[in-house]
Amino acid sequence: MDVVQLERMVLNYLDTLESDKHHRALGYGPRFPRFKLPKTLKEFHEFYDMYLKLRWEIDNLESIVNEKREEFENKCNHEWVQDWENRDERSRWKCTKCTKFR
Ligand SMILES: [Zn+2]
Image (cartoon, rainbow, N blue to C red; front, side):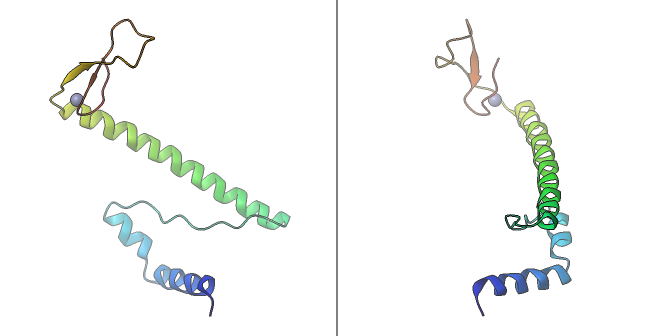
């Protein structure tokens, strides 16, 4: 048995145990499936469907990133230092702990 078949079997078995559901209950994201580059129109449609799902997941992750960043910034006891790397702004400061700018 080659390693590709073994992985397929393990993943199929984990699906029967509702592994994804249990992971999500603990706060984990989805397990991203492997993709196969399409060689036929049918495979292309499957590939495109997967692309759309991954796009949706990226948008979802971006929302979480922004929400968590704001949450951590609001809890931070900021330590402001002048940001000398940013030469576009006249006076810009950033927090050394959470990287918030002001
Ligand atoms: Zn901060």
